[in-house]
Image (tube, rainbow, N blue to C red; front, side):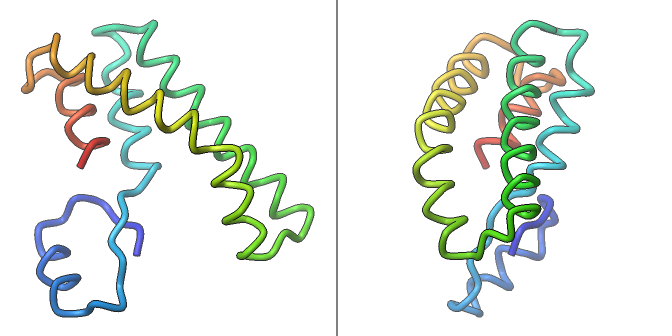
Length: 111
């Protein structure tokens, strides 16, 4: 269940074991978009990576790729990039104020 950070979701997921809660890329993207003025180089790198993932999904939609194949492609194509995204965001968060736009964007993405 992709979602934003609304506080009621953790309780819902806790009582519905069949549901897997994942964050929303659109919300994460917006937070980095809004924080570009604080560190445009890093924020733009993150925005480009998110755009690339959206582009891949769009191509798979157009090609009629089914859910199983899409999962395989995501594991093949996204795993390494998401690993480096996490490394960058963890380092960035360690060097910015947590209440700054970038700090909030990093915390949201990691959550």
